[in-house]
Image (cartoon, rainbow over the protein chains, first blue to last red):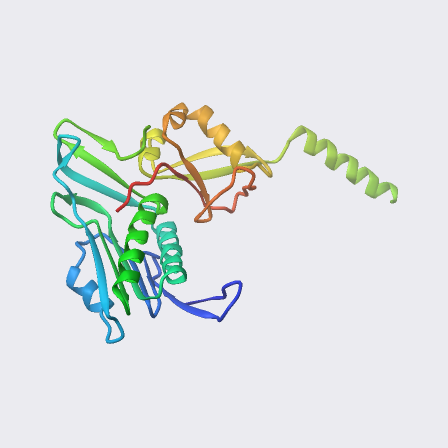
Length: 164
Length: 102
């Protein structure tokens, strides 16, 4: 358990897992897993009697990229920094929309077609905030969080977005 | 300033001139940077008080394939770093090629 003092505002207590692939606060749950993600446990955590709606984005491994058959994806994360960047994004969601809870789970390792690399869930009193924050979180995650995917095809492999 | 202090100062200056302090920096690599470095870490020697920009210049000289990337960032202690930021031996340095999570 680490007590983190932000530059302003109240003292916050953040519980951290020793190997830092997890960040738990009262209203935020951010995790990186090597095992398959569990949709139901994400929904169970995000639901609350105060919410009027929850928005869940589930990313899935597609079988084709630009007409080529994808055999599998391989995800790799800079765990500590990825958690930190995801914490920033979730904080931005709280700053910009009246949302109640934010959950981000990301998978690493080898994923077959149809498996789930990412789940984002947001709860809010009204649906507009949940939709917009959820969209913001996944769009920003793809731009800033240090996680990489390699697409493996039948005849080769490529780190996505590495080259212009 | 007495004579002993003065002698000590001059000797220090001469030593510093002959042996500029070098830092041995360990760099973590992820994604395609691992392929470029041929492993998950690489080491380079940098002058003391080097900046992120100098680190990039050294790395690009040693690993020209870095320049072919769409872009890449340097992270210092888990934060994206500016080119002007200073680096010390105690920092955790990582090369962040274009990210592609989600």
